[in-house]
Image (tube, rainbow, N blue to C red):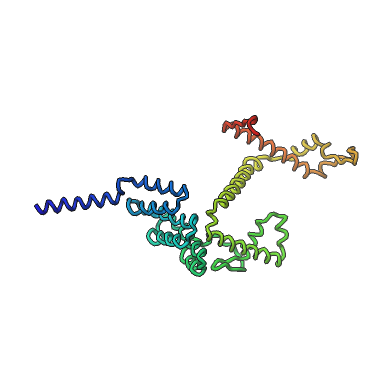
Length: 307
């Protein structure tokens, strides 16, 4: 009989433990929903309490737990500017969930917290302990090492490559040794400022993200136009000749009264004629492309409603 009572007692203990783990009659999903609502209402302290309550009373896999702790840390970091508590939460992720998918961002935040707490030596040590902020692998370019940023080497080949990426009209300004040294110093300064900005988490700043998106969108559009228009619009010598014959008066030299003094021969203005013809054809191809996209996407513009 005592064995039966013991079994019943153990069963009750297990049931009670199970109930306490699953929360007092409330689903974990509802607790998280409530915590998110508190966050959205800018009740950050209360949101942290509910996230912690969820972690304490509901079962979750390691990935989910790491993400919730990261959310708590981000509230401390971004909303409350409490960098000590934020650091404690980020360190919790690194200690208990080192294989988490967010470990790279966590390591960055640890460095950022230490910098904000005016602990540059600790920040430097944290940076050395993780590969999260290591420079992205770069194609090795030949040449003598002309500068170092920490362990990273900058070669003459690196310098020459960066200068070669400048627009032609600017590139010609950096041919002398003095000008190359000036460019190198500016390049290093930019790299240092960029690294510092990343450590501060500015790569997650909403304004930065939006501007990067807009720049990316512009570049993508330019790339598309280059592929769809510029590379496809070709002109031949015969095209140039025919265009010149049909538009001679457009290239005429006139006096101050607008009278034609002279029409230059094609050989003299061939480049000018070719450029004008190319631009016209590109513009026509652009308009045709836009019209085809408008039709394909069934675009409607309500001009009468625009004020």
